[in-house]
Amino acid sequence: MNTQPISVLLIDDHTILREGYQRLLESAGFSVIGQAGNATDGYQAFITLKPKVCIIDLTMPPGTSGLECIRRICLHDKKACILVCSMHEESALAIRAMELGALGYITKSCSSDILIEAVNTVAEKKPYLAAELAHSIVIDTHLKPQQKINSLSHQEFAIFTMVANGMNIGEISKNLHLSPKTVSNYKTNMMRKLGLTKLADVIFLSQKYGLSNSSSHQ
Image 1 (cartoon, rainbow, N blue to C red):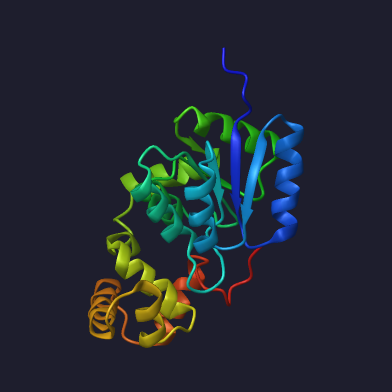
Image 2: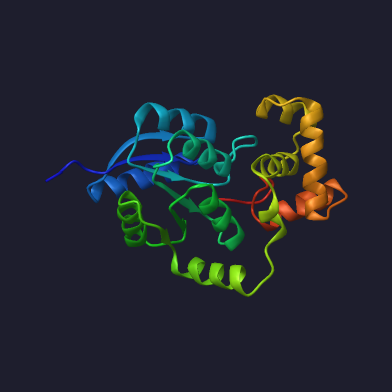
């Protein structure tokens, strides 16, 4: 019988939250083998440490989206066990995270018991959704038209978040390792799909979904 504790990697830009999660998880018998404060470092830590479960926040410093981190991790390891722990309760974000490969999604307002239950469930490669999110996702996917934001490709979504956080074409080009012309084309397609014409519209929509760093976040 395997008695090894479940290894966990924490990716969140708030040190005090990471340390709090570590104390809580270790007191419950988990082994926190690493921490990272942004998505880039988090991806590298995942490659190096090979945790059983990776807990990821979505809102992090500009250019280091938690969703992009999920995408990169799952491209590297399709069997990765990822649990999103975010302040955002929007069903569109939960759907996007699950589409990219996350197995679970809970909010930072959940109880410690929920966090522990979610980590155990995801470690068994089973999906886990906070009850309120599961309910809203059912409503959004079956009773409402598909959210426009979910129609974006991975690159278009990444550019959407970067534009919303004030990055220009050159900065996005360098961050995504794409030519400025390619970034400009993705940006045009993104604006068209979302029905937006002005930068202010991008910022407003990103704030609605909690994807702009000008929004308050935990």
